[in-house]
Image 1 (tube, helix red, strand yellow):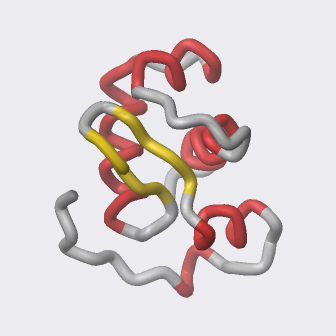
Image 2 (tube, rainbow, N blue to C red):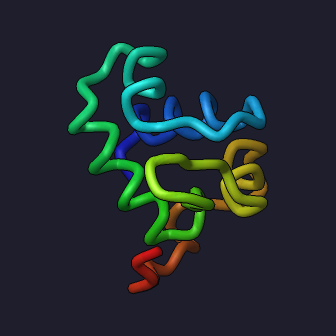
Length: 82
């Protein structure tokens, strides 16, 4: 995890909206490519899901991380490429 960028991405998605990388990047003042790369990694760790192409949402695991119930060191990278 790349704190604080990953946390910023998760916080934007914690609003309950499904958003694309461009909208997320605009809201956290980061470049879209940076956000796209972080979203890919966050998906690999199960913190973010991609319910449809181009859109992302936070998972229950992502919410647990933001609430401090989960430590990043406890996460395993999956190879699921959704």
